[in-house]
Length: 281
Image (cartoon, rainbow, N blue to C red; front, side, top):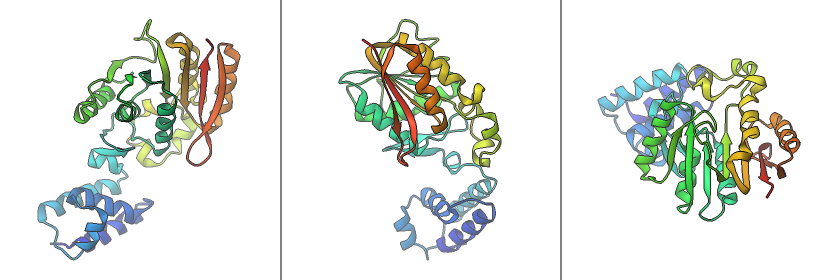
């Protein structure tokens, strides 16, 4: 039977040898989450023996992590904003930079306004907005039925019953529907970039949710071209995309002639990662 500090040291060495950054942090997270201890409690109990069944489970998941399977998929959940969301290989693991997108959405969405979350995945954007804005009317779409199943499960678990989920290829299933705000975090990785991604992403996360043709711009372009017909007068769109794509999207929106206030917004690292624009009245 191992003690917590011995098990932590063993996992840290294995993770480090496997090329995992922050090996010690990940070892702490894996042990503390499975043992249902926070990291301070884990330190305080470091000399305690680990129950055999718990040790077996920690070692099993630790070995899978050595093969670079994402920690969030191993645990079955990820933390995003103030939410604990179920995740599986059917959805992307929510990224910290998308939390900034949620903050912009909450700021831009008018009182009792309607939001469309385009490409919802696990439901991270829609459900985070629902938590903060009980007045909002939220629709979340995704092309993947498996992703929608994860998002619906998260909504049910959090008792956010007012979020409406729709299977749709962009706006295809939303004929005639308009919104005050459309938030889009669509695939934007190029095929060349995909080949160089970390094994955690390349081997385990759904490629459908990561890459797009035309240097990663195809879905963004299609959504931008169709967005005006799904916005209310004076409504706003906001896209998350690669910083290198920001000028291209801003130029495209400007060329359409029906948008104003086209602005690039920064993420937490002060990189331009979002583009927002308002439909002309």
